[in-house]
Length: 188
Image (cartoon, rainbow, N blue to C red; front, side, top):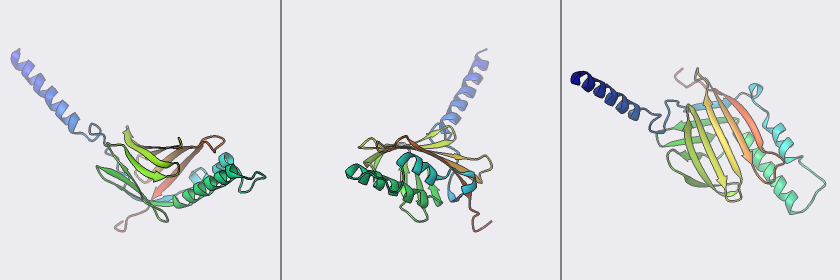
């Protein structure tokens, strides 16, 4: 009887150790987004249409500082939409880098909150795994908030980036789903 209990305890201990060594237990995932990605516009939401809906047209009848802030936000969002047509992603155990072909690299760190500069002043950033999805949350000093959720499709050849962006100048939150195709590597 004692021998059976010892075997059961050993099996339970081994299972606990394996569970603690798994990527999910360490706040990581076996999912690797690393690679070059190209936006598939036919299977994605059109960011420009969504921007028009939540920010408004290029030109309006209004004038003054509120209109200047609105048009500045609109241009920022349109530029970001253009930057994300082609991206490279570098992922390690400690960070996640989004490298647009025509833009600035954004680095997000796993396991710790950090600050980066962006729209809304200093942005507090949190990066974490939610099952097999990577979630990046950013909040600015002016309560500008964005959430990006990255999902790798089971075959590993496509990725979805769901974006929600909240700002006091928007009529409603900006939400868009972008589908990317993985670019073949030079060896394939």
